[in-house]
Image 1 (tube, rainbow, N blue to C red):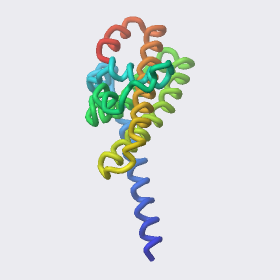
Image 2: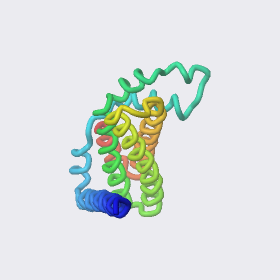
Image 3: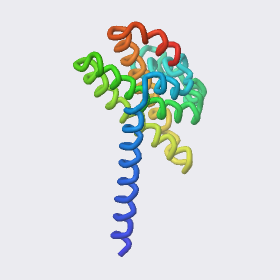
Image 4: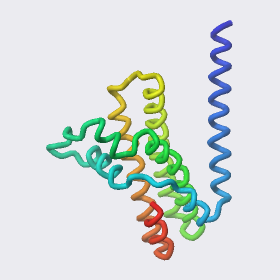
Length: 176
């Protein structure tokens, strides 16, 4: 009896998460460009870039960045959650480009969706580790994943707008 209840509970939770994700994506797809940019949360871009490049571009001193320093550079749990929320908006902004450049917009949006999946997974792991106080050793690796994914999403979006709609690029760069 217990395995059936657990399986049903997991199924309901997964269904609810999928429904929430679907409804959020639909709501964002109906927003105007200005509304999307207005929903972006401030993120410590320099700190995220520092942590991301530490992971993406290894150098001799790559281990000098301590977990506590990474945590502070990214704005702590609040900063990590802001990046997660912004991830969906960044994807919606990339999808917006499909209106005037379908080919490039759809490719970049799909790349960003994949980065977004990694971002959400890593943020979930950080939140679970913080809530339960377990797996503290893995949190720095998840921080690297969050920073790298967010940094790549941001960079992809900026390049997409720079090459496809220079008029909106400066406003987007300022908002990010």
